[in-house]
Image (cartoon, rainbow over all chains, first blue to last red; front, side, top):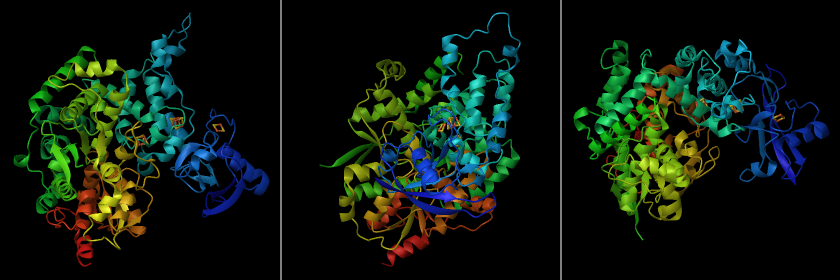
Length: 326
Length: 293
Ligand code: SF4
Ligand code: SF4
Ligand code: FES
């Protein structure tokens, strides 16, 4: 079959990008990487892209195909063309282009370093015998340990796109991997570190990382696990992000539905204690009142099932407490 | 056969976005869709319960779903986030091991989750159950010439991995509805991305920059308005639009409509009844362009 392939070309870091379309003879069973190879080998030797293992192991060949990042050696032409008429190939997002489909991954690596991605000293002071890990202990690390550092998740991350400080899904998946490792002896410091700005609370839960990760790391789920660990700490410095979570549970337990005005006051203004927070709500509050959008507390109607919900959340909380989970 | 659903309103449609509840029930009446409101339901947690513990999210929402099962009805949501959260729990429990259902049921005093119903967003109900041809026939005022940009919401597209209505990166259900109403869909980068709402209470700069890029892209692509099936997206894109403008340093002023408001206009419902005056960004340009036809 003849396939039309539209590729984003860019001669150098500084030059303007444009699109070039190639027509390639290939079959449905070819990978996208096969198609790129055909173009480079048979039509246009100037096309730049990364590849290595051809086997979804090395993570070199991640690019955007038809709007989201994939490993080009893994995805097949036939699948891509199920509902699209052409292949659109672009470099990974959120990273600067060096040439054509090759991006500069410096920021990606630097962000990884920020989470201190190594199992710490305990394991390095090598005991006489090997440092043992039970199968269950290893199992907890499995999904995160699958990461091949391909950059697909980072490319599609909504938070990384607007927030330079956010370390990104790959780094936080690794953070979970070392934090959950029984050989690591820095759990406490890690919890504090990942709780800081640039860490887990800067993720906006867009699900893109889970969606595009080619090897099932599901970074968002790893981020949730770190958040759970943070929320389990009794002595954690209070922050709006933590209050946000705790207040949600508290208010639903009380009323079934969220009383939004109460929520705003509790979370953003720390029940009136945070003056800056209070001031920041004034313009919003004023315009909500003017437009009749203000969720006045006296108009709020709790759920008719609120007592049942309270009992349920209490019982579940007790169960989680018994398990040492909250 | 009349379509009948167990209606899960969600917190926002009963509070800051009351116009969503009003327009949903308004169009249901005209379309002949019967809604039985789940009075005893509770907040789904908007994705944050899982951050305390997944079991909390599972039990609270298993209870919500059990309420619909007791009525023998499919649950209808009209919020992308509620859909993604409750839908995921339903997928997990319905298709998972019996032991998971048993564990959850131990905590549901007086209710029993069985895994016998579905959780469906209003948008999917319109496209799948009601049908776009039937919808087209109910149009009183064609929205001819109105250029609408869709804003889907992350949880609607990607929150569920088992039950999926469409490809999360090439969805077209909203655009199909626009076309059925006579409006023109505008494609722009960002229609499948995050509005920034989950960060709005503490990482305001990041949150509003997200909203800003998408709104700008929609305006540049020529959209007259944005239409969303998610009240949380609506809060960030409409109620916070003044802050968004400040963060990106550009005037926007683009009206953001809830999906049932757009449908309501086409069905000939009165803009006041649809709550179109309860927006922060004036919707008068949209109303005028529809009423002047
Ligand atoms: S988490 Fe997945 S997508 Fe992200 S870098 Fe690792 S392998 Fe690639
Ligand atoms: S879910 Fe969070 S980490 Fe993952 S891509 Fe979205 S914002 Fe980034
Ligand atoms: S070439 Fe190694 S992962 Fe694709």
